[in-house]
Length: 249
Image (cartoon, rainbow, N blue to C red):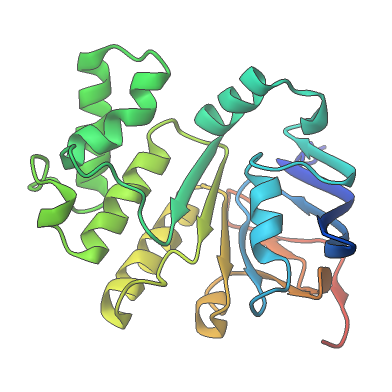
C-alpha cells in the first residue's frame, strides 16, 4: 500500500490580529490549509485581503495571534529565534518582487550568500552557485553585478539564490510585479519547470493570468479562504484528489 504524503505545511485555524491604536485589525480570520510535496499553488486576492500577512507567517517571519502552524510536522511556535533562522535559511526559499540582491556582489556571489551562512566550503559553494546560475540561464553572466543586469535577469539571480539551499518550499511574492510581460512570462516558465522537477512552490499574486498557470488556486477575501480548488499533483505527475472547498467570492 502506497504511503500517504505528509504535508510540508499545515495551518490550523490561523488568525492574525494587529492593534492599531484602539482598533483591532483582523488580517487573517481562521486560515486552515495543507501544502504537500510537489504542490504548485497561487494565493490570489486584492490588496488588503491578507496575502502578505499569510506569506509572512508561512515564511516564519511572523507568528499567528492564534492557531497552529506546522512546518514539516514541527510547531513553528515552539521554535526559538536560532531555530527559526535555521528554518528560513535551510528549508525555505524566498523570491521577492524587488529581487533583494546585494548590489556590491556579482551574480555568482549573490547566489553563494545562503551557502556561506550555512558553512558550506567556498569551493563547494562556488560549484553549486555556478550550476544554479546556468540552470536559470545566467551561466555567461557570473561576474556581472545587479546594475549590469535587466530586471528579468536580476529575478533569475534571486531564483537561483532561493534554490541554493535546496529548500522544501519556495515562496514567491509578486515575483513578476516589476517585470514586463515577456520577462515575467520567462520567470513563470522557470517556476513551471522547477515544479515539474518536483519543487514545491507557492506564489502570492493579484494577477488572475498568473494564477491560471497553477493546478491549485487559493483565493483570499477579507482574511479568509473563499476558494481553494484543492487540486494538486504529486512529484510523479499523478493528480491526487484533495478535499475541494469552493464557495462564492
